[in-house]
Image (tube, rainbow, N blue to C red; front, side):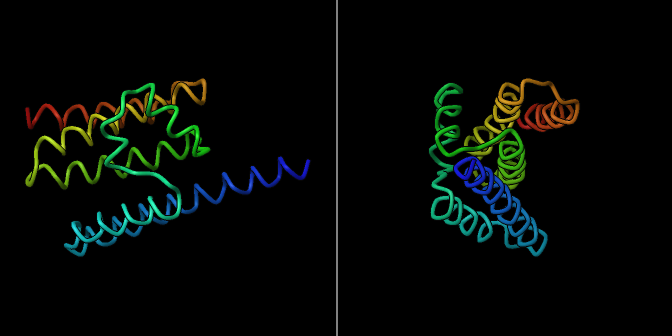
Amino acid sequence: MEHRDLLKDQIEQIGKVLAQILSNFLGMKTQGQAGQGMEIASERLQSELDIEIDKIIKLTKKDTLEYLKNRKCTSEHLDILSEYLNETGREAIGKNKKVAKLMLEKAIELLDIADEISGTIAFERIDKKNEIVSVLKQYD
């Protein structure tokens, strides 16, 4: 029982950290400091959660699922990571279209994986995927 509570607490803490990282990035982005925000977010993801964005965007879907499961990520965590990649991908479009495209495609993939993990198909995720697809189509 105690082990289960510790695991639950750890999973909740991951969610709080992810939400804080996303919030801080969005705040910096609105202040015109998106590049610095991306650097800080990547460092925090790596140091606090052992999640490497540069690595994730290059993994296959199967490997991404394993990578994130090993870090105890839930579907809610993947929603937050997807939102982060969506925002950073959009920000990167003007600087590096190839990297931006990888980020946006991975954002969609994370939403697909979130559906698989949760065992449900969420309409909110479908809407987010469609929104990202429309952004990708604009820059093809």
